[in-house]
Amino acid sequence: MSTIAERITEKAFKILEEIPEGVRYSELVRRIIELDGSFKSNTVNGTIWNLDERFPDRIYKPSRGLFRLTKFKADGTDQLKDELVPKQPKKFKEEDFYQPFADWLVNEMEECTKAIALGGNRFRDKWGTPDVIGKRESKRSDIIQAPIEIVSAEIKPDIAQLVTAFGQACAYCLFSHKSYLVVSNKAPDDEVARLDALCQVFGIGFVLFDSDSPKDPRFTIRSRPRYQQPDLFYANRYMKLIEAEMFA
Image (cartoon, rainbow, N blue to C red; front, top):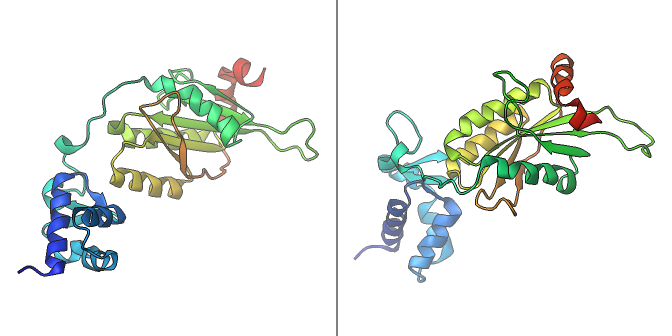
């Protein structure tokens, strides 16, 4: 007869087999208990916390707290095999989320006093144009007047272009005091974890959103942007191109 630990381990493998992208630790515990209510939470925790160490040939962690079967790992990398990456149907255009995020920056975060949807190739160079750009300036009634801050954002519902989107958000630091990377919450957990860590290292704001609902994207901030001093030559050069919309 199998021991309790063996039965728990068997359930864990069954769950991971059904979810190629992997399962986070707390979710795995919850699912195991759902499959067999006789298991005690502490027993499950004590059994699965080091599955990757006990079965290194079958389980690995592509990011902190995420368990995935090694059979689903692409050769030579910790990433999920391309054919197993969930394909996201394109229900809405990327542009559908520009104005909602601009409004969120102004009304929810109060990060900007004005923000506009931009996108396209307004800056006319290979470094790209922010999808949303805003400014923060002091009110006339403020006793202490602060310098104007420029805030830029790269919005990416397409989970197949996350690395490109991160590079764009970094490029916006050239002319922005703060930069945001905004990606779909449908992105795999390990990709989100990597982006979260990278954004904290580079001082980029990181936001997740519901890419199925442009009317209510439910923007959720994971990490706040760090204030950085842009190159004023480039800041003035690019702001000149949208002066009428941003500073009139």
